[in-house]
Image 1 (tube, rainbow, N blue to C red):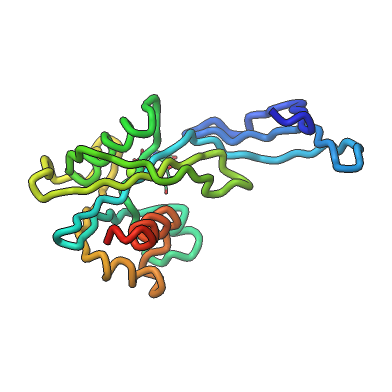
Image 2: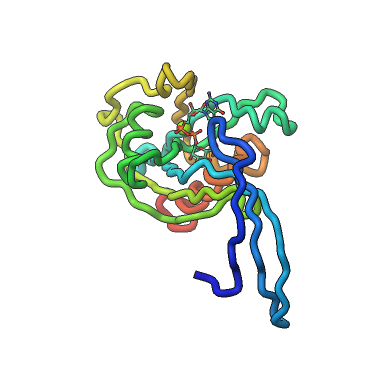
Length: 192
Ligand SMILES: Nc1nc2c(ncn2[C@@H]2O[C@H](COP(=O)(O)OP(=O)(O)O[C@H]3O[C@H](CO)[C@@H](O)[C@H](O)[C@@H]3O)[C@@H](O)[C@H]2O)c(=O)[nH]1
Ligand SMILES: [Mg+2]
């Protein structure tokens, strides 16, 4: 609750796949005066993402898929390397990430650890992302992954040496924020 904010009106500008809102609100300034402001917010719910790692092999699991928003903003192929991720839908973050891990990577992991909760684009997108890590072993692989066919997901699963992936940040081959944060988490905490 913030006593300096008073929501006056919420208009739905688009309600197609997700919801684009225009919110009109009063904002009380430090000097006590009140301004009326309007901001748009894209509400696609919250999400979860996970970096799978194997300490014996010094490897990690990433995904590669076409991401339209990056394609229309300068990413020539539109293909993006990312940690496995998905939208929460009705799930809690942990259930969501276990489900997404199975669907997208094919691994059924046992322990998952939440390491961060982050807003990725706080000026325009409502989404909060829950970031996880989990150890994986080759025998945890129960299917090929790749995502759900009826959702038109064509997700490639990548198993990479951690060092190689870490070097792909400065070269620009990895440009996804949640992926960079989780790779750095493993390094900062001496996990790999
Ligand atoms: N038809 C249609 N499908 C859509 C649209 N927007 C998204 N989808 C589909 O909805 C599905 C959502 O898949 P998830 O795996 O649940 O989500 P995600 O797209 O991977 O999102 C994850 O990564 C995002 C990008 O970093 C995160 O923003 C998000 O929180 C989550 O972690 C995908 O198949 C995607 O193509 C749309 O406008 N139209
Ligand atoms: Mg996904």
